[in-house]
Amino acid sequence: MEKIRLRVRPSRRHRDVAKIVSGLGIATVCEEALCPNIGECWGSGTATFMIMGDVCTRGCRFCYVKSGKPQPLDPGEPLKVALAVKRMGLDYVTITSVDRDDLPDGGARHYAETIRAVKRLNPGVVVEVLIPDFQGSRESLRVVVEAGPEVVAHNLETVKRLTPKVRDRRAGYEQSLKVLETVKEMDPGIITKSSILLGMGEEPWEVVEAMRDLRGVGVDILVLSQYLRPSPRHHPLAKMYTLVEFKSLEEKARSLGFKAVIAHPLARTSYKAKEAYMEAIQG
Amino acid sequence: MVTVEVPGDLWPRRGDWKGRIVSIAKMPGDRVFEGEPVAEVEIEKAILVIESPVTGVVEEVLARPGDPVGPGAPILRVSTVGEDQAQGQAKQAA
Image (cartoon, rainbow over all chains, first blue to last red; front, side, top):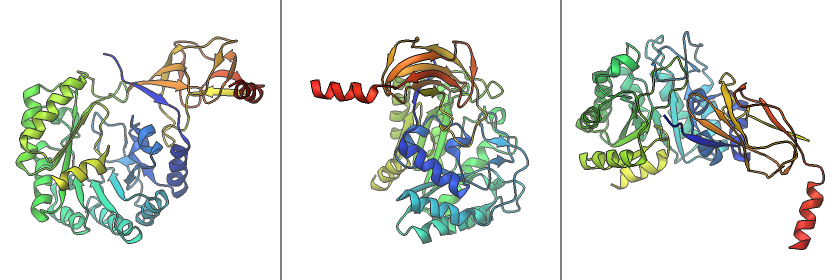
């Protein structure tokens, strides 16, 4: 299968972003997941912050983020992220995290503190969080929702049949749908969002089923993207989708009622996040 | 003299990724321009097209197709001696 070609020559702005995040000692998913869009995003001065360390308690078989025993939480991290947002001059910030099944609340309070710190130091900023499932805990979800993020994303990642194969055993298709449904139920004003990675062995009808299921729990923004195996030890790549196939799936998704759809081989959950949000709130 | 490398600061916190050289587009004595693709490196996720950060003349090729490489691996040595003068002359001629 033909691999995607990426022109790589870190720009001055790319290096500026690197200085800000490394200077503050914060992680980004752009780096930890070897995101192919890092040149484009960092080159335009934006990044997706990854809080609660760079070691995940889960081991999904599509993900390059390190898995194992995580570090203790850094209580100064919310302020560091807020400072990074200020130094980068962002008006739209995307924050994600590793999963922290070792913490009683899954890290929900840390999320809430980060959201509040970012908003306090950057008045008017729009905050999008890409959250774990918190093992389905309503209480943890409430803590995050009450901190007031404008967008809450949680990824379905793949179709129902492949979920046990590619996601960690503690994740679940139904559980992820429930997370998205609960967030919407707690605050209907929040824009919800989810991503599906394509190319892990799913059938076309299964993708449509997953899209219907996401719409069924009120998800507003859908991201469809190409799975790129990060290393030979990860889940094998089954198919590279063409741009025409992405376009066709985007049309299908729009016909199902999503307010915004980002469908592209290199799309990732936070890719063109502000554009998707603007479209969703205007739609 | 400038060494063209596989970018070590593309994903700054991850220095553990590996790839292999697929092709090198230049030989010693070739002119190379800033931003011109000079090599391709295959990693598991993609093919990275490496661009020259400078204009000059290739002095030495430091890697071969098939070589395993990682962030910061050297690919070419490029002489930039006389480039300022050459660019000045080109501007005058224009």
